[in-house]
Image (cartoon, rainbow, N blue to C red; front, top):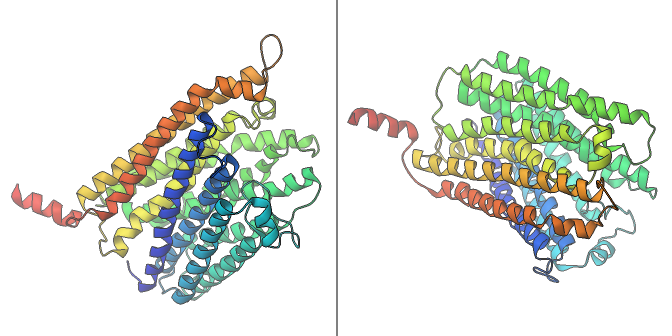
Length: 469
């Protein structure tokens, strides 16, 4: 860690990991409720558990992105953060708002929560991923403005690098797209049209810029490859991501009423969306192969490479599987969508946040070369447990989705089965998914426990082994 103000990212990373663990707990609750319908009912109904699960995902990733920006921007700009105190104040505001919102979901009926938070004055609640009370959304905007001001002023007074500019562009886009969450028209088709402006243009647009810039930063640090080489790759990747991602929004417009040309635009540009993710995979492995040094933080390198591969598989391959309109006609809203969503969010965004945490947290704890070898081994066990189990979760959900489409939407003979009868036929896949989820939970326990394992600096350990031999 070169600058004292980089330390403000530590509470952001710690809280992000706490929320990540909470998200997985509620994922296990949901997985159990799929096969045991009255599990924890009425204390935690399915709709509440799902709401908490997805909201924790969004919030912990936002904490991770903010922590990443506070860590890498001072180093890239070669200057201290503009206002470290503001960063800490905004952390506590955001943490308090997020905690109170989740407690509100769990302890107060949703209709009552809407009533007591003034949703009647500016109705914004009730939409998937955007269930937050209006007052919470307003708080998010305040935090985002303060955050952007802080990092923007830091970059203005320091060095301007491609990584900084791409990261800030992505973060600005994130904040701007979130403003559409305040627009809630009564017409359902119009509502969905603009709802996708938040959800799609986040995860298949500006978040990809954030991901690419963080990945580029970590690769520069762990490989020693020339910055100019990495920056050229970065330009090409983000150009493809924006071109395909923005117009590719059309694959969400297939069945909500817009003109027919969206069938073509959505299909063609969505089919191109795997390209930037494939380029990101080539980019990561190419940089590691060309590295000038073997960085002792092997865990961070593993997370960086794993992120590129899993993002390509989850967002690229599984997204392409059902993105073409003639296919999406049958698969829309099935478990195939859930399969794509799980691997894409984990591969692209959860793993990039863990990558920067894996690199930055040891440095902030006085270990610039990474945690001890013993701690890194445990961390890499966490990587493999989480990543392999996510692959199986995705495969099980894909199998469930294919069977669901076959039984419910394109039966070979006779009438299609009803939704609930079909769900009963998918029970085996849901049980297998739950088992894989438990393995994932074991992985996150291993990952978190690695931070508490003590030991020598890995370089000191390596030198000691050389002297012994």
